[in-house]
Amino acid sequence: MISIKKDLCTSCGLCAQICETRDIEMTDTGAFPLGIDCSECGHCVAICPTNAVELPGYDSREILPYSKDLFSIDPDRLLNFMKFRRSTRRFLPEKPEREKIETILEAGRFSPTACNYQRLRYVVVEKELKALRDRLWEGAAVYARGAADEYLLSRYRKYKNSKGTQDALLYGCTHLIFIMAPDENDACIASSRMELMAHALGLGALYLGYCKLAVEASPALQEYLGETEQSKTQVVLALGYPDVIWHRTVPRKPLQVEWK
Image 1 (tube, rainbow, N blue to C red):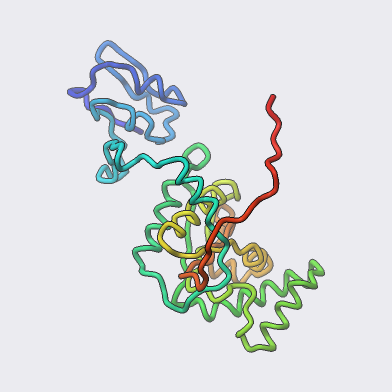
Image 2 (image 1 turned 60 degrees about the horizontal axis):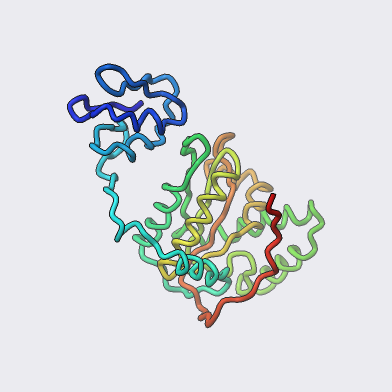
């Protein structure tokens, strides 16, 4: 629940107006938090012109005052950036710096979640990646046999016959990030922002749908990742420095939209 500094509150009412759960009441002495249904979203913190609102339990040092120079992005440049991103399936052996991986995780941490539940959890695999790769392939093979997925089974056989040199599952990435959540909606939103951050940092990224299916088919992998009913693998991202240079964007099919 929020707290409000009475000596700074001017009774402007902005916090009560912006509160989606109506958990702030205006009184003769200023804004008063009811503490009945606060989602800790922070809207009141962000909108207060006198910085009178606090969120106990959160690190106030993370709060940044608005700056047009620091917070504004040219929309054309942003759209071009999104158009230029590519899925990466060729990675260099050089490992990205820990700071870059942490920045990508920050992009996920500050992504929106339903009702501000913030129930996302991340498992980053780097040192144990080589050993985990075989386990993911075995899980993928279990899934493929059950689903009669001959395409994936052929990839699995190539991987085994080549003694791991033909890896069409992880593609030589240096890091895997497993995004864990009760359902996929919040995880998908976070992963989209994380992937864009990866590209902004000069890294390549790839969504690994088969790895998610591998985990679903393997109780051992679920145990390794610490899965629970409220924390299941929803998205798997491969990361690393790309071993490819793109020279231009590519076209897409025409937009399908109805205006009503």
